[in-house]
Length: 584
Image (cartoon, rainbow, N blue to C red; front, top):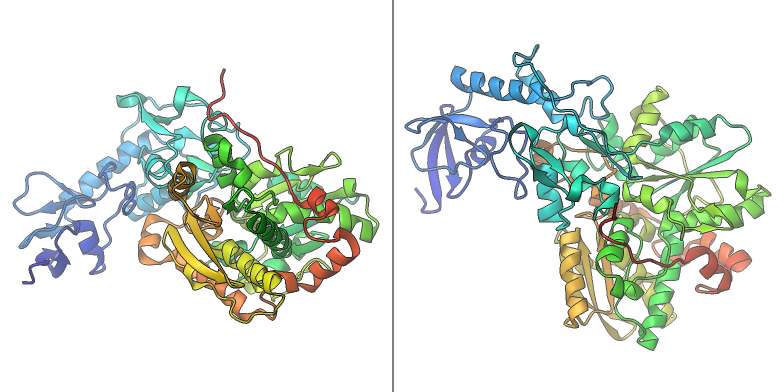
């Protein structure tokens, strides 16, 4: 036996595992799947739900496999009658206090509690009696909390506290009155929640979900007086197929476009075009600031969860944020100005729908700062999941659709825009344009590998036009906190900073296809989706934002110069200090 390995037996199978490995992990290496509900690797390993109990010979009582470490010579049984009966009791107790309305639940068919119940052939509930009843919290524009569906697994709390380092929610009370709540029992809308939605992505049930707004979209689609335009973010195409049983990370762009056209949208455009405008403005803003050494480092501003976090926690550093609107907001502003004028449409009759991988975009879409002439730049934001529901409601099988292209003239985008959807992508796209603008040359070395990859914080020094730039990319608000503290203390010497609220960036946004804890153990979801976007970039005929012909034409005919008066009016914004907690 190697000093770092132990040998044990699980269900009659000899298993070699590293010291410190849990029984749960060891079992999965030999294809034995022990059910779990509360377990999240490296985030919530607490043995809370007790669904993963097993028998270990010589051990009194049951062992909780998600936290019990393996030992040499250990003999484990995962499926004895005693184990199965005990798990059923645990499950029955959970279900006895769970609002069972599966036919109406947004997570039906993708609910881990439902899956475990089917797996264990639960047909009725033995324990009945008083159930908890809580008012649904739907005050925020982004998140709905239905605590009657909460199973107290603690995943949301651990994610908010350990990964995002926000702590907007916490376990409170004791015994039967135990619940997941906020400071003072307030709505998520009135506490320090950033609406990143990572709690939703890790919730095993329908206790947390996005605030759905597709009924309003359907209503507008039926209105002959309204021109309904839809735009789709780069990360959506890398996830929407998963809602229709396609492989994780499949590029479903063409089929998505076809589905949107069949849903009845008047025009189907690509937010990637908006991303190219963002890079054009942001890169030029960075160059101006860098040359003038004005409020450095400059920090990206296209992630609304991050912006809200900065407004609540670092108001004194808000001048460091780029004044650029996010891509879909820029695009919405252009659709209601340039496009409306070109097509001779009253902008008041244009209804812009953004399909986003993010639920914080719902909050962003309602910001007063993101409007022009009394009109919001974007009228409705729906998530990847909401679009999938619309497609299914229309009886469309996405996987069987032929590929179609985005509409002209606002449907052409570059590879640089595609990588916006993954952490480091905004930085890389901006550097591609910045180096060409600074040198006046069409440089061929455009892949900035240093900002790619899965690390939560990526620091690098890059040479751009003979100048040395210190840059950093952070994803996840816990990592954002570390970078902002460096800047605040004066210890940082960065020139350019990219921050995304969600770990991995938009591909893992709070509005994307939800994957169970087991699926995320079996598949590197983040890498598969990121690879999809990098492949789009590599295969693109144009890979630099400033070379987009649509962008060139609109600047020439309408906007003028980047950072010019009209561009600044339409494409830039400002930020406001926000209180973490609203007073009664």
